[in-house]
Image 1 (tube, rainbow, N blue to C red):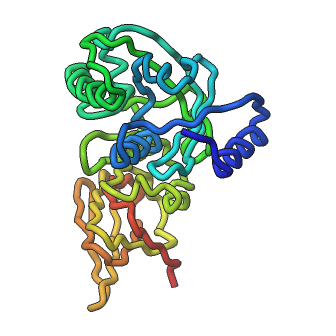
Image 2: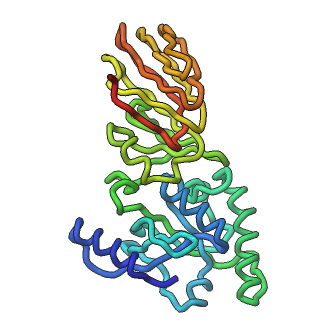
Length: 291
């Protein structure tokens, strides 16, 4: 992979904002365009924080092995840069030495060691065939972990990426339920939806969160691509629906919910503060002010 003007601009933005110095490499995960974009999406939604590559792959292209502290920019299938990553851990060993925790951090398939071995046997076999050599059953592999450090919309928390096996507060977290398989947890906060248009990897599947409601919603919203579950955990609200045929008022009390039909504007009027759980399609979400 080669650097480009776009990757240089991303690196300049990162170093200007952080004071970092030094150089970077570029990388794309996967050996064909569809897989490259699929694995990039896993990086951007916080699922993938580890890659594995055969030592000979680095030797084949004349690149040095990664070291902790190295930086690289991840590209998509057409060479566009998407994020800056920093290598945090490197270990060498035979393919069979992969550990369950590494398979989980790589974020692919069902994230088990057994599935990882099955899929990587296939991957390394394809790579060996491309290089014109025979696949070695216990090929020497570089097991690498990394964190995403730029841009801020995708950067990991200071403590590193969060795993789905760690406890979390759903009122401070969004879960991305991907269409294929897997769940990614990411920080929520008031800016989550305003940044969503710049995070296309979240536009498929569903987004799950919970939040406190102690006053009427100051906006209407709708979700054209799918229905939205609104489930009241406690409290009392009226959910106002505004379909073309005229407004409807749905009374919700603790432990009640509805699925708002696709494309229907809706908002909440709060009678008793409480908490709401929502499952929402991310694509094409719209808001408008009340009035």
